[in-house]
Image (cartoon, rainbow, N blue to C red):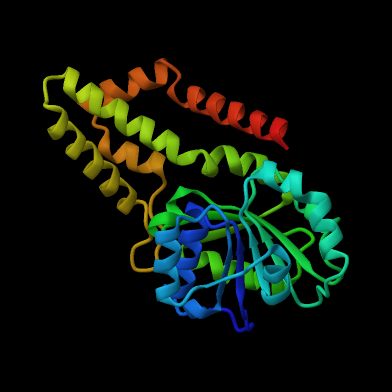
Length: 279
């Protein structure tokens, strides 16, 4: 856990990612619920009431949030940020930013874009989390360039509460978006395709689905370190499953012949190119 005092965390936008992050930091004891400040006019009334009962607080305005929060999670949609840029710039010009950390989870919005308008003295960190945050096992890339050790420590502490973090360069973020931001889709597509293949082979959908899910979970467990020692690589595990002339070899040979890995590489490249276009 971070040795740096985090203080109040403000959420500008409280969608699925914001909810997951807030849940993670509170559950991990990083901050209590009354140190979470939320500004999101789109919150359903019943949900807001429930959050209030749990101790979460609400900012009346952007200015209120930016003034009270020590760490601000900017979690609005990128198009909203672009629309609000000049308003934020005018607001930030009147705020004291010394010691504040702004963490952006907005796709396609680069850290320098936010640094240009941030309050004087404030630090800005850009991160790219993925859907796994909603169940506490997300993958979050943190752009380290331009960030101080203190802001990185705070950012890693927050996002490690709901998954794992890796440090990358800002220039890597489009690739990160393609690999892990879009990554859950690849896994879901694979599971759906395997389930459909199981049905075609004669299994009921329910049976095929359960077998595929458990197979994926078991395979991921095999990749985890055991007793501190690193696991074998995916290629090494594939070789262990494969027997010469066996069923796995027949399936693997076809995947290789049909360009399975190349297809995934092209999908990642397409996602990366789209991320570049959007930013």
